Image (tube, rainbow, N blue to C red):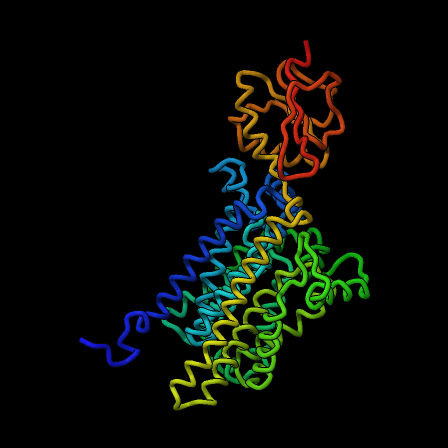
Amino acid sequence: MAIQHVSDLFIYRWRYTLGYITVGIACIALLFVASLYIPGGLSEREATAVATTNALSLKDFSPEMVVNMPYYLIQKASFFFLGLSELSIKLPTVIFGFLSVVGLVLLLRLWFKSNVAILTAFIGLTTGPFLLAAQSGSPGILFIFWPIWILYFAAMISRRASMPFLWKMLFFIVVVLSLYTPLSAYVLVALLSAVVLHPHLRHLVKNLSMLRITVTVLIASIFILPLVYSVVIQPSLVLTLMGIPSSLDIVANLSQLITQYFDVFHPTNGIIMTPVYEVASLLLVGLGIYRIITAKYTARSYVLSAWLLLLLPILILNPQMINVTFVPFLLLTGYGIDFLIGYWYRLFPRNPYARVVGLIPIMIFITTLILSGIDRFVYGYLYNPSSSRLASNDLTLLKSELPHHKNTVITLIVSANEKAFYEAAKRYNPNWKIQYVVTDTTFLQLGTVIASHDATSRPVVPPTKIVTSAMQTDADRFYVYKNTIE
């Protein structure tokens, strides 16, 4: 039978389902490639996270351990089951990254129409800050993960979805766990501000079952006991969790903030590529800000406006924390896309040809934005020397070298800064047969000695082998000595 209308086409009828499937496939592919190959190896931040995870213990508990504790507990489980490797270090982040994308799609579907949700999700998935956070084996991804799911569960409660007790329970559990991550409290303050100011939200809260709220709060409070205990012992932790630094230079911070987000004429590469967001993305954000100003009566506008107002002073105090801007940036981008499409449809409410033709340049614009985001991230972190050299593949090199020294005592000499990391490697990889991790040559056993590049002390005899790397300028990563003590 001949197709009479566009709506008869299979692709048209299933366009949104196919769009969400494509987002899922792109998410898995990008997270896998970014985590293992771009730029490859481990950064100093990841090495610090490994040392922190290894030190996490009830026996030697200290108040500082509660900061980002949910992430470190999952990473510790990853080490326990998989050993310590680049994969196990990054796996918790990849999981949080994937769940963030799932939550993002669900949240965008509640806030916008499906076409806007899919396009916004693609832009978010291919944005540098997200890809960088989702491949680093450190807790930075939590700045994205918590706000997404807090807003989603709050939206489900406000819409009075089925199984209300479940949504309330999940909301309070996520809220409590998010408090272990610095700056998460500001999302809650924004929600509370919206509840106080917006009449619909006030009415909704007044009609909630206090018995159910009390039960969910009590159950969720179990998860906050370690945090409360730590804050009582060390009250200064509150400053850390609120993002208030010990020292402050407002002029320097403002300069850094402007450079990171708006200096498009002097782009830089490093741990953070600047500008953080592309010019085209900032234009969409500008349209989004205009949209929430003109639609200020909605609860979503109240929440987002309060959040932005709270974030501004926090960014001045902590300009390096770019991940906290990602979720509000993306929601504003969604508002910007919604404004563009809606404006064009309003111009031609009855002319189908004009509506379709007008969408073509919008789609080209958004597609270019998505592809340029991927291109910028890949080439910026994979091929730019100032970025690619920030990662080290020493762990992989050591893992490849150790099988050549079976049935022998292996002593690993490292620098003081590396000791905690390699002690974790020794602990979670018993098959490596490393007997000692030391910082000098005072105590060496008969067998094989492997000294790292940064070790300040090495045996005086010539090495039998030098293990090199193609990733770094200082290519001599390990020195191997056999039978150093006779």
